[in-house]
Every structure is written in structure tokens, then in C-alpha cells.
Image (cartoon, rainbow, N blue to C red):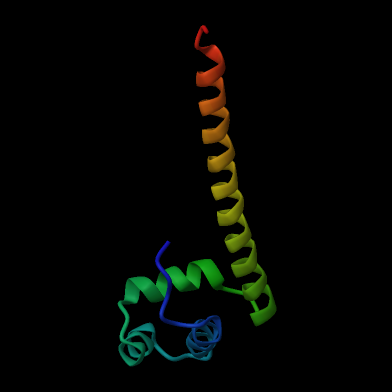
Length: 88
């Protein structure tokens, strides 16, 4: 997954500015992002505060670690099955 160059605080600040009435085009221009990115942020992070956003980030990191662990274990299991299935 590609890492964002914007912190959670910056994203939340941009969303708060949008809620106060500033246009998405102006915010996007100031941040140097496309409007599509801004609207994706809005869809994903709307209504969150900073603690919820940091929890989401931690959960995503943990999920990625667990997926990696599962892939390693599944590969080990497959190798062991292949070895045991050979006739000696």
C-alpha cells in the first residue's frame, strides 16, 4: 500500500475546512492534490476525529502484519505437505 505524504492531522484539517464552507477545489489546489483524492478522503475519513483515525491506521498495520504471518504459515504448511506426500 502506498504511503500518503499527508498526515492524519492534515487530512482532518482539510476536511474541517471543507465543512466550514471552503470549496474542495481551493483546498485541493492548496494541498497540491486532485479533487478525486480529496473526495476519497472525504468518503473514507468523514466524521472521524484524530483518535479514531490513529486507531484505524493501527488496525490497518496490524491487519497487514497478520496477512503476512498467514502467508508465511500457509507456505510452510504447503512445503511440509509436499515433503510428507513423497514416498520414501
